[in-house]
Length: 131
Image 1 (cartoon, rainbow, N blue to C red):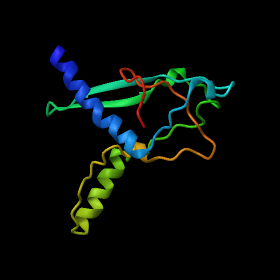
Image 2: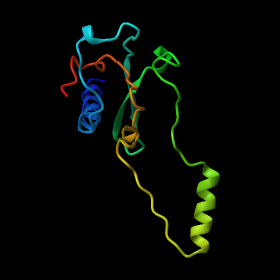
Image 3: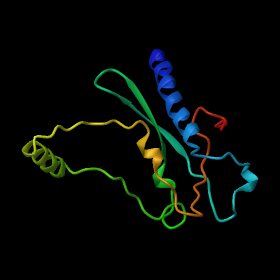
């Protein structure tokens, strides 16, 4: 188990680095938090891939958010399996090749609406985010 903790720490570092490179947050002092807002907690979600690789994702603890205050809508652009099969059939009929891509940290590329701000605690295990 102790070796897993070291491994998971190694999986967390690229996730934190992706957020830092993307400018996902700005650290503020708690005194700067608006009166009508609260801090949302972040949690780590861990996954062991079939290859044995460890992956860590930093997620907002959604049950602590209030609709209309902390968020307005949720959306994740994904392709339905039936759409993928149709696309593959069309590509095959046209003699085209299909490729797949794995975009690292693709979910970080979304933009918040103007004046939309989410306030959260530093992730578990990190006193500050250092960004």
